[in-house]
Amino acid sequence: MYLGQIGVLFIGLGLLLLASQIIGTGCHINKENKEKYRIISLKSEATRTSDEQMFIRDNWFKYYATKVRNISFMIGLPLLGLTFLFDYITK
Image (tube, rainbow, N blue to C red; front, side, top):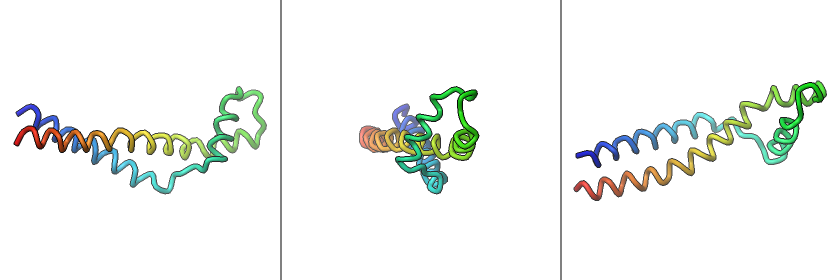
C-alpha cells in the first residue's frame, strides 16, 4: 500500500520536473556565456563595470534555469525508474 503511494509521489515529482524542462526550453545559456557569467559573478558588485553588471542582470535567469534543467533531468530519470520498480513490486 505505501509503496504504491510512493510510486504516485515519484510520478508526480517526475512530471513536475518534466514540466520545468519544457517551460525552460527557451531559457538556455550557451557555454561561453555560462563561463563568463560565473567569472563576473565572482567579482564584487563594486568592481564590476556597467557592461558586466548589465550582462549579469540580463542573464541571471538563463543561468539558473539552465542549472535547474540539468539537475532536474538527473533527478527525474532515476525517479521514473524507481516508479516502475515500485509498480513492479506492488503487483
